[in-house]
Length: 154
Image (tube, rainbow, N blue to C red; front, side, top):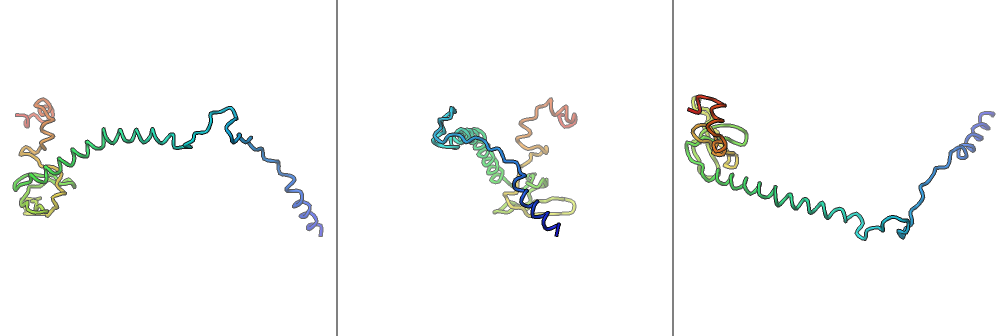
């Protein structure tokens, strides 16, 4: 019986034992608290500069690069002919055996006569006879070739 009386006393004392929580003072609603008045647009005032920066990046960086990439891809796909050495998007280097329609048949291993069919869109670049792409060969000069491999520069 003593236990029941103690639990009743403790349960009644518990709400009084808690310390009151301090609350932050409320700012006046009308903006007369000494700070700047609230913006009529709310948080949208910060969104406009962010959108302007994104638009500048899009028109100066992203759009011209995607246009160049599309032009290069179309040139590669349209100039494909039998005997070209190509690199696929998966990194396979092979010779074109047949290029007609939407598919290209590539010879992967000449000794074992391994031929693989690819979609034209899977061709990444066409290599020249020396094993370099047209873009790479433009970037390399004779000095760079000599430094990389002296026998290739000759």
